[in-house]
Length: 44
Image (cartoon, rainbow, N blue to C red; front, side, top):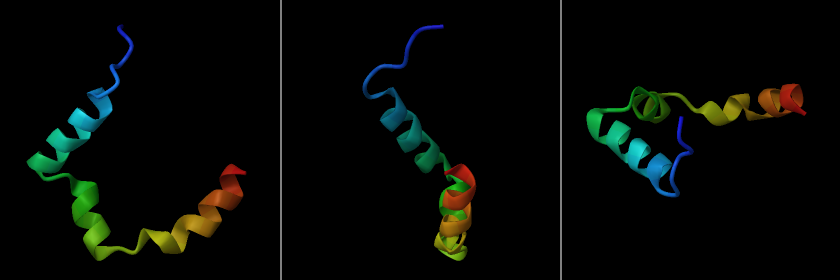
């Protein structure tokens, strides 16, 4: 498997966005920031 190029991630995200990324749709409805403190506490 080859290593991703410098712009591969950006291009993939742009393609997902153009196809109707479900996380973007959810983020317009759900305020994910309310989970940030709990997630940071678990990850730290």
